Image (cartoon, rainbow, N blue to C red; front, side, top):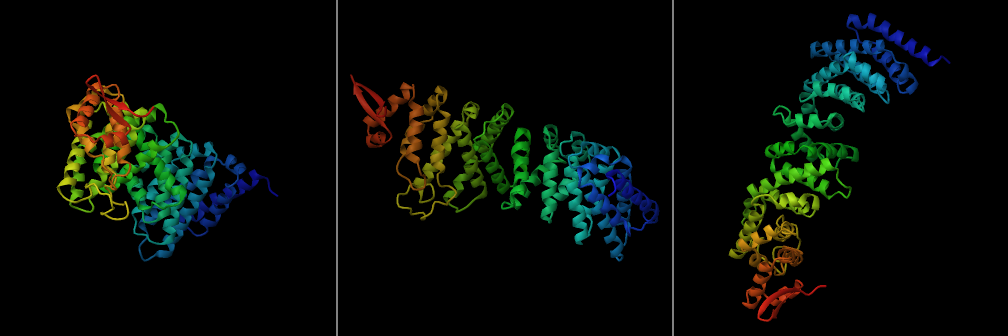
Length: 483
């Protein structure tokens, strides 16, 4: 059996003869077989480590020639074009194999110009009117090659980014072929470092970020590795750049906003502790989302007269995310200090409560499931979550406790404490809110005690919430019945 170096040299010599003979005459015949022999050898590490620069220069010559031929061959000559596409696919397989765990080859490929040439060729394939399978195969192999040459190699990642963004990614992420869309997602994830994420805020490149969300929505039931690449692009890349999140949110459709909010919710709900950078970014995102909630929240009132409304659903998801964020000490303080957020929450609670009293709708308190036997309406739990976030924002925060007093929010909370099938756990969240509102706050305690004495607060309701009013030396005190 020939030694590895001898075998590799023999294949290389055959490839060189073919390039100088057939390729220079514009004839692709026989090229696939020669390149295929090289591809097979490069599956093994020993051959990858012995590959010389001249081999990659030969492949560069082949791809350059193929690129020109694919663009110029007429529509009536299908067979020659088919041969060129098959040759391109095999060249990409060869390059793909050569990069596996071989930084040396990754660097040589970049320095001889193969990344630039390959991206140019794939752009041709992505916008061409070629529909045969060989075109898709070549496209897929090219993306796999880019993914391999970028893996663990910052310089190659930078070169791919310079050549491919935004045109190639825009043509791939929403491609009709699932594998093309998948492989491009993986290449994008590999190349996206912090400075490139910031770069996506550029108006010409922002669409790439938007297409990631669209691609994620397009295949919600995709295989694990497909789901993971797009999920991680958002959670591990985009969410580290609050400015990009803000720019994306402004451009996304309502359905896409919901998808993005669900991804944010998944991130903040993870049990793994966040890094300092991640925590800081999410705090800024929390402030951004609070601003959007303040701007959009009144859209939810449309549900009083309509069964469904996309903007209202966005508001509900925004509230869900803010509730989760205010339940986390790392994000709570920044949200407690946002001007007018608490005012907005109390106002929308007041308006939904009033809407539920004016007519029978989803905001009306019910006890017998009169709105249906399932709890699938988008507004189910909305008022309960409003009270929950009030409780969170007032947790050990005297300024916000006093603000609720000024906004007359305590009577509003107590008036929303009846059993309501449309708001599961409403009483529990109300009890939580009252506890946070009255902790070390005598004025709020006295207000509730006076309300009970005047009949404005049901004593049985207070008892069910774990409170009782005592008259001590003519002074009313609100006391907890729980130790």
